[in-house]
Amino acid sequence: MNTLLTGHARFLKGYWRRHRKRFNDLARDGQSPPAMVIACADSRVAPELIFDCAPGEIFVVRNVSNLVPPYEPDAGRHGTSAALEFAVTALQVRSIVVLGHSQCGGIRALMRGPDGGHGDFIESWMKIAQKARARVCDVPDAQAQSFEALCHRCEHESIRESLKNLLTFPWIAERVGQGSLSLGGLHFNVQNGRLETVV
Ligand SMILES: [Zn+2]
Image (spheres, rainbow, N blue to C red):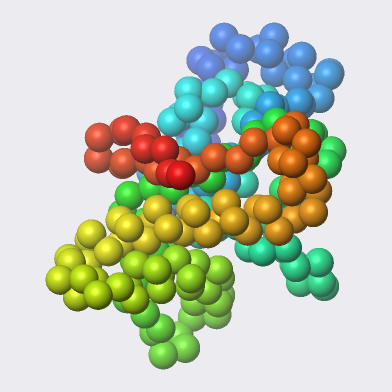
């Protein structure tokens, strides 16, 4: 906690002072970010740093393994779906980017398989990417590949799964159909800082 507060003191003296006008404008006028980014909660994958964005430029939701669940309008507490609804229908973002990354802990857990029911939430959450896992593991050459290689492929496949799930939200599919919203997938390499487009 102290480290965070020391960092905030540096922020006030440095970044905030240099960008005071921008913060004041955003407080007065509200936000209108053109893009939404769905990223992993992983501490190495901060979208504002990776895309070199200023405050107000990207609307970010972060969760375990940057997953988008399918459209399920029930009584569940759907944090990611709520963020999507706000970004698309209220802020009217023009693009949504699913940002995956290398060495993703959630994907590694998914690839290791069920842990026998330990844990309350992660296993159930990661089932969103179950089809991605199957596409990677249920192929003839899967046994011949290293665990690292399989995880890398699953990171890509799970981004594709999330992109598919985005289109199950009616207000997203409608806007994509009209051409007012675009969807994209990117994979960030923690080791070399590079981005790869996932199609
Ligand atoms: Zn991750």
